Length: 111
Image (tube, rainbow, N blue to C red; front, side, top):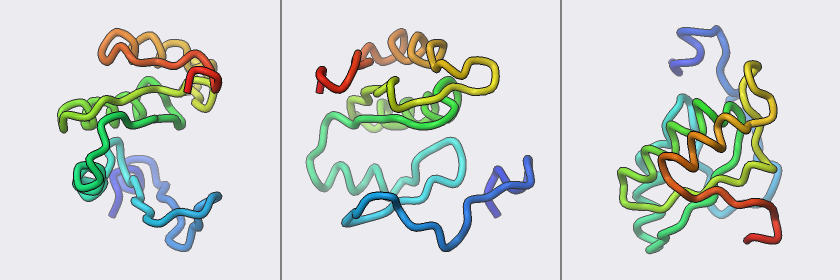
């Protein structure tokens, strides 16, 4: 049972396939990335993690805190992110992200 199913009656489909080919897939069923993802990043000696998604000021921000607490450097890609129904532009999420983590890229050229 995922937190979203218990609270909102929604869960990602079990047979969902990624839109891009990937060596590994880690499914996020709540606000935080799975601990196995953090372990995977650390095993690969990754420092900076690029983050984008839906609900920038909640889901993405929660993931950012977990990444930060794990010693990684989360970096938001706001042009690939959407905020909640309160702020579809994701500008609130980007402001919160900048305040907490300091790393928000301005566009694809900044990669």
